[in-house]
Amino acid sequence: MKRYDYIKARSVDEAIGLLKEYGPRAMLIAGGTDVMVGVKQGKFSPEVLISLREIEGLNYIKADQGSLKIGALTTHRELERSAVIAERFGALKDAVDNLGSVQIRNVATIGGNICNAAPSADTAPPLLVHDAEVEIKGPGGERRMPLEDFFLGPGKTALSPEEVLLGFSLPWPPEHAASAYWKHSRRQAMDLPILGVAMYLEVELRDPDPLKRAQKEGASVEAQLEALGESDILCREIRLALGVAAPTPIRTKRAEEVLKGQRLTKEGLIELGRVASEEAQPRDTIRGAAWYRREMIRVLPKRLALRCLERIFRREER
Ligand SMILES: Cc1cc2nc3c(=O)[nH]c(=O)nc-3n(C[C@H](O)[C@H](O)[C@H](O)COP(=O)(O)OP(=O)(O)OC[C@H]3O[C@@H](n4cnc5c(N)ncnc54)[C@H](O)[C@@H]3O)c2cc1C
Image (cartoon, rainbow, N blue to C red; front, side, top):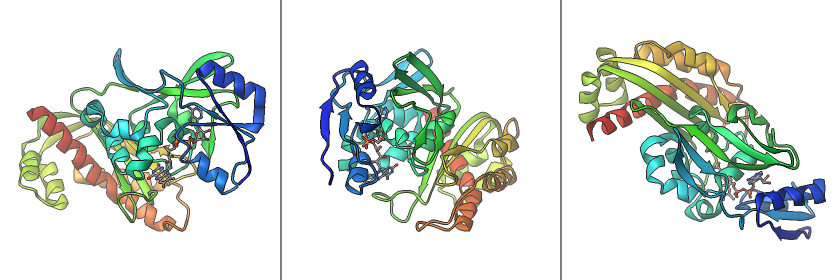
């Protein structure tokens, strides 16, 4: 392995200064779970690693003026253990529960997961459906942008070479809203997804009782979908995002339009899945074939919608 210097930045400004000083010879490192694998494999060969880990104030999960703020250095383990994430940002909780191993989650950060910009980054689809914005700092000051515009290609982001990701801002979801993420992989943990699908759903519960009853009885997915048809639930807002279905994690906005403002039904969800699978641009990879990914994109939104509704009902009953 090539030798490198390791410098601990004490503040964001110091990190920016070091990036300026060393230019393309330097690379930022947070938890190091992607960087060190890349260095060992010869994918990157930085002369200087600038560590962000000692910087105070970049590790937080806090409610702030109608939004949730998450610091870039927050580890997946901290997200996994956060009550507010479990309660209101279910898709993110689903993602971190099955990301790597406990050892990985203890050191790996959400900022590193997003800046690594892998199409398979598990936290990306949940953050996308929650309409996350990224907060960035560089020599010219701070700026914000929608996460959707942040991914430019595999391993490529909108960060300029002297910028640091500070964190994320997610709008606080209204009462009758929930989200869920499905990591489709051969094993539950320690495996990257073959496909990742996240959904955010906001509803008006006009007559949810048939579906509530079916869920309480532990009915099959098919039976729950039939019960959904007998219920009257209006879809106020729906967002769907996919991982490993295109060169970057993506939102499927054409599919979302199918159900926005409509009554939630099995037929509507089938149509949404069909349009989403058309919008996706999956490739054949060693983890899975493109046709298989398209099939799963068609199928999974139904399950995710039922899971979101279950979460909305559970909160309503408390
Ligand atoms: C065994 C193993 C299992 C894994 N399993 C999964 C999995 O199931 N799902 C999954 O999504 N990933 C998985 N990963 C990948 C990895 O753990 C995650 O992507 C992790 O979140 C990366 O975070 P990190 O803090 O370790 O990032 P690092 O490796 O430190 O950095 C990653 C990239 O982000 C940049 N960076 C980091 N922080 C910042 C910042 N604040 N500002 C600007 N740039 C920054 C770095 O320069 C680098 O380019 C796995 C990795 C391993 C080794």
